[in-house]
Amino acid sequence: MINQRTLDLIKEFEGFRAEAYRCPANIWTIGYGTTAGAGVGIDPKPGMKITKAEAEEYLRRSVVKFAGQIDKMITQPINENEFGAFVSLAYNIGPMAFSKSSALRNFNAGNKEAAANAILAWNKATVKGRKQVLRGLQRRREAEKALFLAPVSAKPPPAPTARSGGGKAAAQTGAGVALTGAGLWVAMKWAEIEAWFAGWWPF
Image (cartoon, rainbow, N blue to C red; front, side, top):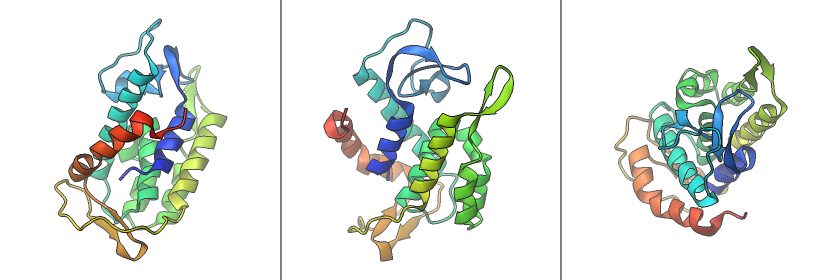
């Protein structure tokens, strides 16, 4: 489940750019931080332009794709804020880097405090051949850590359903929160995401 706080966080820090540009890491990027490496059907090039609607579609594809990929890596119960923080991190650094991160390793070992702190380590980018701390990345990591640690508001849980993916079934019935597998999540939440992109986000 991708909640609104997660979507707002990603959109805030990615921002919208209609024309392709080089990010601080010198990678061609467009829309809401979409790169060719996302593998969602676009390869940003100099001079390329897209509409906001197109950018939102590429963002939607990326969020769905990355959520499904990282879900399979998680072996411990996880709530929607923790999962959202990890999706935002993976959207920014890539699923492969996330799979090797100490944030994921600590979480799967049951050490959530260490996992939250490990998110902060991803605050550097290669600029002119050197790894440098970027203030923008630092602010994003702090926001992701805050989301990870934020209590989840109580609400009625969805009906229990068997997972079809390779990740860990997760439910926190005491808090009224449940998280299902990637395949089921996509099936159940697709219409919700479409509605969100159609007008739930303020612009």
